[in-house]
Length: 302
Ligand code: COA
Ligand code: MG
Image (cartoon, rainbow, N blue to C red):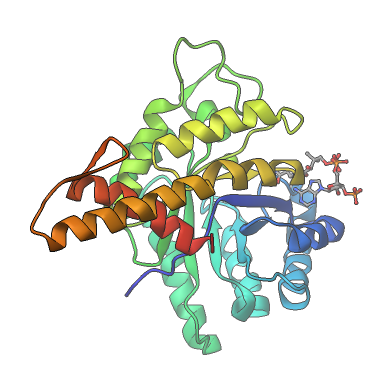
């Protein structure tokens, strides 16, 4: 079973209780939109939001976006109802489900099995993928087991807000690293990205709450990108363009990568293992880095 490749440079969070914001999200430039049933929706509005999301999935024009629904976690009274109602009402117009707060692989397998049953019952032609949030200390400890829990899994997301709460990190604003000397989220991002890549999944960085601080947003996004993450959440439309900018290779980088690849291929044809391009050595290891850039350019249509 090969996993679908999807752009995830910008994943926009949209409260499922707001028809207006769902419409705005469908028209946005985000690669991926997740319609939220969890923390952006008050407990009293959660059940009603399911039908609003299903309507939006079935009736709005989402273009080429990945359409995702974020559900409540497996310890809540809403989880199974979220899965059943959303998939029964809009399963054919849904690409992935995002699971909040898993602790172990078993939590992800629960969702996998529910989806399998519903796909059979509804005779859905396409499989629904799974994305999971790593936002509990236990999940970070179990991240490798989680990353291999099911071949439906496509993406691991670092949820630094809940994660900070779970670990006891003293911060008041999601994305604020609390004066810690160094990057307080370095270990978690590194660990998640390593597990994701080893299992063939995408790693994505979570929210940055201050949507009026684009520089702070871009700085966090750039750290995530440097470690191999492919995108970051947007909690407000103002955060979409900064993510697209940070996570897309520049035209000059793509052109340079193509030049390096061509030079390497020409050298290889002459029996050489290494060649120089503008003073930089290119061998088969460098070609692998070049290929990462070119794969992104292909996926994003650059
Ligand atoms: N998706 C789609 N549209 C959004 C949006 C979102 N996440 N956030 C804001 N908008 C819309 C607003 O409705 C507004 O539309 P309008 O110009 O037609 O009136 C426009 O973008 C500008 O919004 P603004 O007035 O700057 O902010 P706001 O006060 O309406 O909303 C928040 C601010 C934080 C409440 C809102 O961005 C939000 O709910 N974000 C998502 C929160 C969330 O999903 N949390 C869980 C994941 S961490
Ligand atoms: Mg959370």
